[in-house]
Length: 180
Image (cartoon, rainbow, N blue to C red; front, side, top):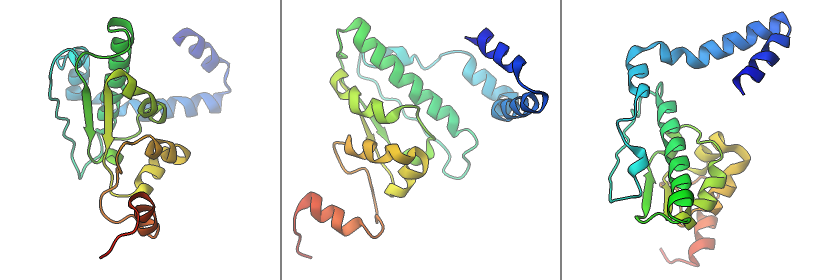
């Protein structure tokens, strides 16, 4: 794969090649930090054991600095891939211990690739993901057209606080009429 991509890169025009290198350099710049390289070098979290026994994993990110939020996105991507593969390959499609992911401040994690598909399929493997957001606009900003699919596959309403002008209608539709 890498060789094919490199050959495509070599075929590109000089300006395009420069642009590719600049983009690549910008994306990889955080790895200039030794502490980040050290963190990513080895697996000390043993993500592959989650789902075998009861485990609690707390992932805490800064609410004021999003520089390293992409690391959390990578972690969740890796975790969901590992859990799905383990359920399918080792346990006949269902993990022996249910894994519940409570993803608070979901919008601050960054985009988890193909999350709209994951949230629709992981339940059958004994994996659940509860996303928690302040508003639907946060989800739409990150997942664009897939935001509605994600919400549609949530067992519970993922939004806290006010929802904007659609809030009362959506809740009345979900709960029926209410008296205040």
